[in-house]
Image (cartoon, rainbow, N blue to C red; front, top):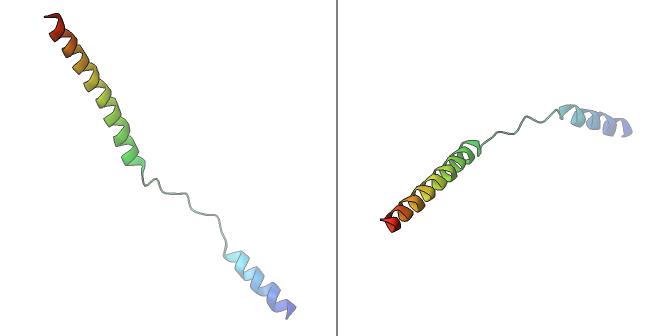
Length: 57
């Protein structure tokens, strides 16, 4: 009985291996979000410049 437990434990532990590297599923979405934030900043800056120019004219 004890040897059966030891054998099954060895088999169970031998099946365990290093886990695969996690996939970067959200990486493209994260990059797109960062680009969108950069563009948003540019758009807001240009809008403020246009508003300032309109007030000065």
